[in-house]
Length: 228
Image (cartoon, rainbow, N blue to C red; front, side, top):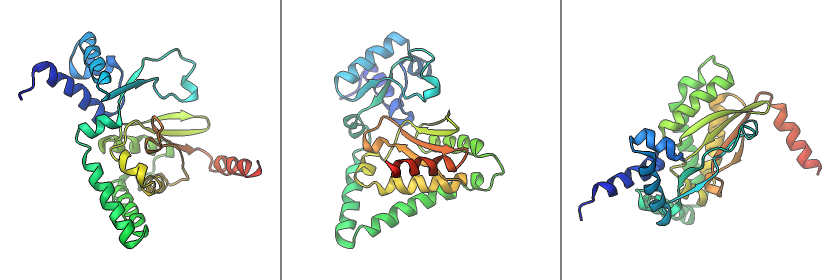
């Protein structure tokens, strides 16, 4: 059955969120050249079908005092399955098969190999003389090209990379080794210790990685946790 123009526009709204991560109605209207009222009608329809959901946008502590921000719209698991992510089921099945036949070490190796491939794409960052903060910004741009809709923000005495979308969230929820290897890759790329604070794969609204300006900040934090 041939899709009508409203259906095509509705799909464009959903696909924009799938590929670039959570967005406000105003942002979607600007990017897709649709009136705000038209975007909201499509958003309401997509929410009613369970393809999208809305929530308050993720904000660092430094931004929470600047007034109430507009709600952002993001893809649900049901929506991801509908829009080209059914192949995740095949990936999960393949990794489960590997683990059952040869042990989980093969899954670990797969995760490490995938992380190494990303490190190779990041050679220019690794070899750069830029500061850690500047490297983090370049890394966020690379992650965005890879489909993670990443941004950076100041957080206390450090920097935070926020990945607003995760193309492999469904797979990573079954195999956390993927997230662990990715975090280790970030550390190598930036040349400093990093700490993963949240992941979409574990049900959080965004993946966040903290990059301290002083490595001792994390060490002190861990010592305090151990003393409790």
